[in-house]
Image (cartoon, one colour):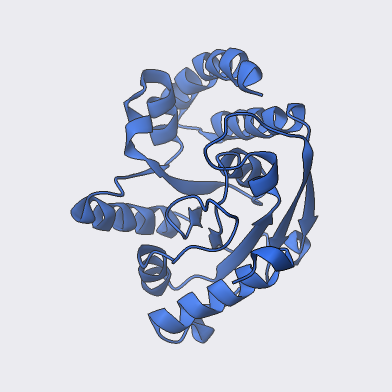
Length: 229
């Protein structure tokens, strides 16, 4: 997986990044990036089973909120999000010349988890992305779980949903804790089940805490029984 990414993605970026800069069209960059990410996951022997994605409206803009137990979650999840999605990524990644440039062109949002003001700025940047009609995909725990069980959720994603007033789609990722546990570099082949729960419309959010509890309940419900909290 890593060998493929090391060879293929820089070559693809050398073609698609200049094209995006010249034409302003980022779709080829995004599509090749997503193809490369998912192909790497497939080469590692990880099979993905999808549940519920067919129930989403292709014309709608969503905020996707997922659990997070492995480094393989982002390259596995983002390519199967219908349409184009932005995501919050560690600000350090934006310092790499080719990767950082590609991430900015693709409207990804840098976030510094250790800085409260930077976190607020990231939420505001994410709000602008959603208003452009792009999805926003967020790992709501803010970090990876060691044991596959849900960690406490961060408040920023729910502030974003409250401000943007677009439907929230909870996503449960089950199996990545096995194929690539936190703290391990190797990837084991196996099946990962990704469940797209029914969207929660803005009219049913309730308070910020109520929305957080609704999202947590849905994500938790599709985890294997031994990982449910």
